[in-house]
Amino acid sequence: MCEKHIDTKIVRADDTDAIKEAAELIKKGALVAFPTETVYGLGVNALLGDRVREVYKAKGRPSDNPLIIHLSDPEDAERYCYVNDDFRRIAERFMPGPITVVLKKKDIIPFQVTGGLDTVALRIPENRIARMLISLSGVPIAAPSANLSGRPSTTSADHVISDMFGRIDMIIDGGDCDIGLESTIVALVGNRKLKLLRPGGITPEMLREAGFCVEFDKAVTEKLSEGEVPAAPGMKYRHYAPRSQVTLLDGDGSKRNEYLTRFKDDSSVAIVCFEEDKELANAKNSYVIGSMYDQKQQAHRLFALLRSFDDISDIKQIYAPLPDKSGIGLAIFNRMLKASGYTVITL
Ligand code: AMP
Ligand code: MG
Figure 1 (cartoon, helix red, strand yellow):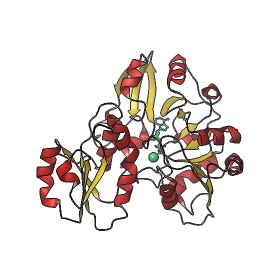
Figure 2: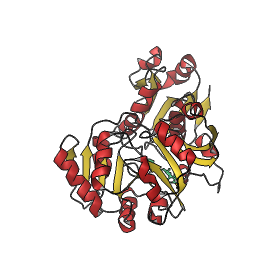
Figure 3: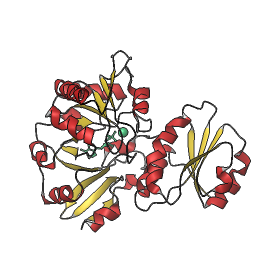
C-alpha cells in the first residue's frame, strides 16, 4: 500500500466553483472522489493511462481488476466503444442510472482502464454532481468505488475521508448515496440476451420487463472453484468485507432468535436483524438494518453498517440474516455472501 502524502482538498457539492475546479483537476489527471447514486467513485481522466495507474495504487487494487468509465451522455459511448442495438435499448430505458454495460473497447481507451481486456465497462450516472463533473471535465472519467481495496464501498463522504484522505487530490462531499450498492453490470451476449455479471439497482426483473433474456454469471450467487474465472474480474476478490468474520443465517426470525440467544450479551458478537425481529432487536448487541419489507432501505444502509463494525474493536463475529434474492435483494445477497466469504448456516 502506498504512503499517505497527498494534500487532499475536501469540497462541498453545492459549491459550483469547487466542482469547476474538480473538473479542471480531472482533465489534468488528478484523482477526485465524487458522489454517485450508487456509491462514491474515485475518478481519473480515463484517457491518461499513466494517471489511471495511480487509482490502482491509491486503492491498493489488483491491476487486473478493471475500472468503469463514466460518461454524461450515452451518445458519447461511440467515441470509446463499439455500440449495438441492445446497448441503445438499455440506454433508452435505463440510462442515466445504476447500470453498467460491457462493450468492445476502441483504441482510445488505454489498457490500464480495462485491466488488459479488450472490453470496457461503461456507465452514465444519474447523480447531478457526477454528471456536472463529467460534462465540465469534457473527458470520460474512469472510476472504481472510492474505498481501499477489499473494504466495503463508500456511501458517504466520511467513508471516503476515512479510506482515501492523504491518498488523492480532492473529495467532493455530496452527502449519502441514494442506492448504496454498486451498479448492475451486464454483458451483451446476443440479440436481446444479457449476462448479469454483478447485480445492483437495475434488477433482473426490470431487465426482463424491458424485453431482455437474462442469464447469470455463476459468480453472482456461487463461490467459484479454484482457478475458475468470472466474467467480471472484480468478482473473484474478497470484497465488501468488514474486518470481523460475517456469518449468514438462513432462517426466519424465530429460528435466528433461537440460534443467537446465547450470543445476546456477548460484546464480541454483533447481531444484524430486521425491525420486525422484535426479540433480536431488543438485544444490547443488535444492529437493525431496516424493515424486512424494505429492501431499498437495507441496500442504502448495508455498507455503512458493515463499515461501522470496523470502528468497534470488541467485535470479532457478525451474524446477519441471509437476504431474500428478489428484486434488489439479489444485490444485497451477492454483497453479503462475499462479505461473509460464503459462510452460511442453514437453521
Ligand atoms: P468497482 O467500480 O470497484 O465496483 O469495480 C468495477 C467492477 O466492474 C469490477 O468488479 C470489474 O470487474 C467490473 N468490470 C470493469 N470492466 C469490466 C470489463 N471490461 N468486463 C467485465 N467486468 C468489468
Ligand atoms: Mg469496488
